[in-house]
Length: 282
Image (cartoon, rainbow, N blue to C red):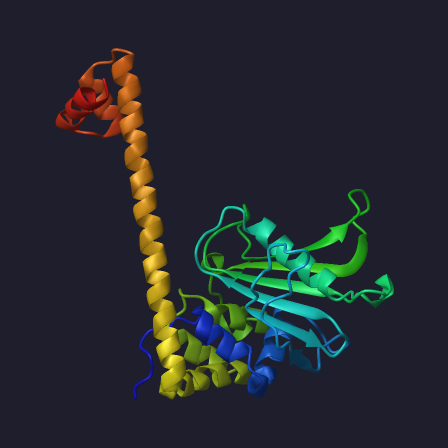
């Protein structure tokens, strides 16, 4: 069985299989320490994936379904999310997921001192934040002094579309991983990165193993189809909304007595379409 052509590394099935499996937690640790810019003083040295992919409901509230959820050797909770489709209010979703995970630590009768840092990493395949930088991190800080109030909150947004390649030899480990997942990166560029980064080389080697697994490959292809259908429906809905807006603008223009030719230029509707609208709605 051949390797999946142009494999989508952001596919939910592939992503979880690559970085959410106990047998490859060395890759997950490398990814985390790189993205979070950890040095030898605060490296995560071990990680345990939590069995439940879904944080339990609290008072029947909305329960977030998490992509990769794990606990590190120092007790920190890590949530890694991949988002392909654009969401205008994604920061609210990210904050909600973080808050539920943070609160999930504290059982009845436990003390607040038992709460551990909770880190959220969001890989976005769309532009979201109003900055040119592709990696932006957030903490809770004092508005005047910029001092961090508490280290328990840490949230990262990585916008893959904003990533620009530099000299491969000068790229940091975090940039290696971002390039690996970026749809803009070519296979040749990934191979060049892998020559200097064993973790990326291992990730590339795993792609062939993943492709040979019939069950995983089938689930991957089903996920790809589901995403294509979702994006197609989103596009159709958007186009329908645009058309409805044009019709409403035409109706408003006709009611105001504006010349049909002018309405046609403004709405991009044909004269015939506007005449039909006039007959149907007025």
